[in-house]
Amino acid sequence: MRGIVVVMIFVLVLVSINTKSTSLVNGNLFEEFELTWGGQRAKIVEGGKVLTLSLDSISGSGFTSKRQYLFGRIDMQLKLVAGNSAGTVTAYYLSSQGVNHDEIDFEFLGNLSGDPYIVHTNVYTQGKGDREQQFYLWFDPTTNFHTYSILWNNHNIIFMVDNTPIRVFNNEERRGVPFPNKQPMKLYSSLWNADQWATRGGLVKTDWSKAPFNAYYRNFNDANACVVSRSSPPCTAKSSANAAVPLGLDAPGRRRLRWVQKYFMIYNYCNDLKRFPQGRPMECRFTKP
Image (cartoon, rainbow, N blue to C red; front, side, top):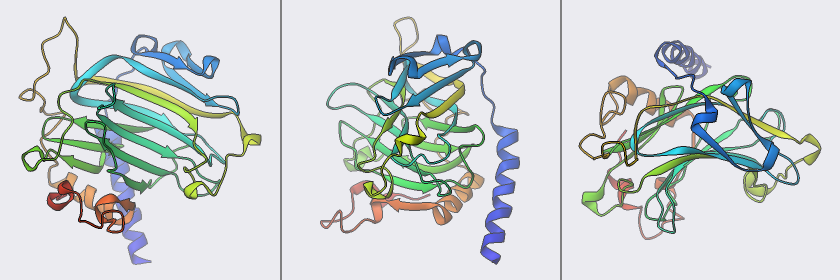
């Protein structure tokens, strides 16, 4: 009971901190994104303030940013599929193109009503992923909008939820581990059916009687990201770190990261010895919160 009380107090403190520290831009989403697939299942409404994706038994839907980035901070608020969302996946990620692409992933795995969502994270470098970490959230992500952020510079990638770090992936190129620092990426998001694996390893299938499934987006902010274009200065490793995209976490950030990983992490590839019988991946041997 005492541990539960401590967790709840910490959650209340986080809510207070994050309400004060998260600043988002109310941009026109018509100007920021292209609706790329799903037909009328993808919509921008409320005069460009809200974007919606829908999934039914025929198709899902998706969008992509008009700009591409090399380093920076990307923020967006999402409200996930409510109710029985088992089998569905809402993906929100940065990615380059091609077989040897880089990618920085948030994926939200749907659940049975009453069960927590799983946040699935991954980092691809030169076409190779297999760096999964998964978490439960400490709130219901379907009742209100929450901010999901990717902070990316040449030193590290930080995954944040409501300004709370949940994962840090460090640049270990000096030890032979590839790091995404050369390929510009666009922001993508999609809502799709993945009931072959998404919920309880595929044991729970999508209940199409609950369709359509809907996810909502607003308050996109790329003000602290370096946009790659012919008319802009080049994005360099030296300029990749600033106040909005720090070289690492400060002491309060490290404490919050440890709290999330202690109470809410449910899978870490670095600890999966059965998966890596020849030894843990190189980057796992040097990872410190």
